[in-house]
Length: 606
Ligand code: AMP
Image 1 (cartoon, rainbow, N blue to C red):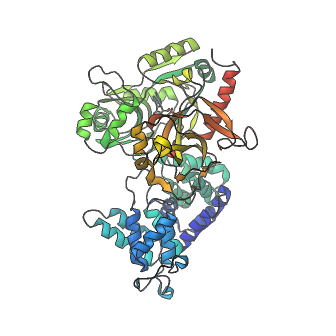
Image 2: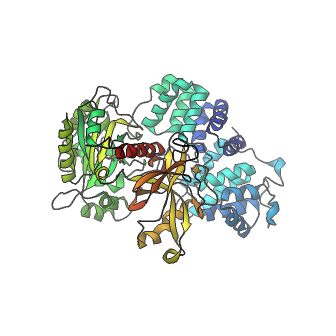
């Protein structure tokens, strides 16, 4: 396939904000794509070459890309930089300069770029294919060592020289990690179902994605083998599985009742969730964000490999830091010190951890996700020689509110943040990628304040005044709406920042700066600067109220009104273990709002 056809499709996707229309554009396009190219094309739609959990990223800096644009187009670097300062988008600069007509810029070519440059010598232009682009990008990705910068520039230059202006726009966005044409995972899955199956098949397509985290694999499978092949995709070692999550309820009584009067309660540990993929001596530990954290927890990986009684397994647990002398559990902030890149040997010694295991998804060829909870738990327990490092989560099957409350008090006394109640019904399967009522969390925060904390994405900032002059004074925060794939704002956050955090904000956020409002953000506010939703912060608030400016659950309760947080405060926790899509969802905030109304009616709780 010609790369220009793909780039034109990106352009069409970018020019619509309707998810339905995007789905149709993509479905029509996917039908025409060569089956063996579809996998790469699906990754490229998301600006990638690999599935999300793949460690390698293209990540060229804007500076390098500007050099390549100048070299490929024949304009000077300073002119490219000038345009980049105006637009903030190397893609726009590439499009303008490779087109050879930076009309409103006054820029002049300093030399003829190449025999094949698009503008002047369009007749001689080489027809760049998707295969050429993938090969070029792979070369950029794999070029390292001393000459890596010039090597990467040269690779990009040769792609740019053969590309159309629109194609150049997307090449530069891909290599700088700024693709964002709006085709999120859910839109691509919709389009795959529309192109190769039926609407009814959509849940099976999504399940295949949830258990493999590889949208390219799902695309290739559906195109080549149809729905039978997709239904056969199972959990496998090496492909992280999207984690199952729990809902929340406001009292232990409601939790027990919702789960049918009998449920398993486990301590809810305050650590980092790890999904371990074990194959003989090789263990890979994935975070909830699908990052490979094996090098951060070599002690856990070693214990899992050496204590596992089977050849292959996928298990999940919460990794918690403990006090070396007493073994007491320490709060989440302590274990996050293990997430650094250097000095791991020292950190392993000074921050000992324990792995509290709570689920098993696969063992020696058997997908366990469809087995009920108590069976999985028994299998998990028999998979390892347990000890100090590898432990099972503390669990008790409770049959009344009183028993549940006693278990909850024990959890708090053991320094846990609450409990996870889990269904013991026959249908208590492991639902990859879903948040439902098979698991229900209840935390100590629920007793003190009205709600749980919120994990929100930073989408904008307001410049500070007075003591905060010259810094970001407040941030615009958004929740994620799973149905539309949009980030909807819920508060302006200006409290809870200490001086160190205020100083660190530019470093934390400026990599995601963007000159215009990101397409995925919905808000009635106009901050001084916009950010692509990337950084997630934990926020607490006094109350959820209806708001005319914020867009969470807009129009649901009342026309033109959304939900906002009253007195929001940053807790000090940067949730770098969560992707922006794993933020608190708009629906959860709506549920919490309803729960709050319900509470103040005096109906719930004791
Ligand atoms: P939340 O992030 O508040 O939605 O809570 C869900 C998280 O609690 C999971 O992703 C785990 O990291 C953590 N967790 C701690 N203990 C358990 C447990 N016993 N079972 C399941 N998840 C747990």
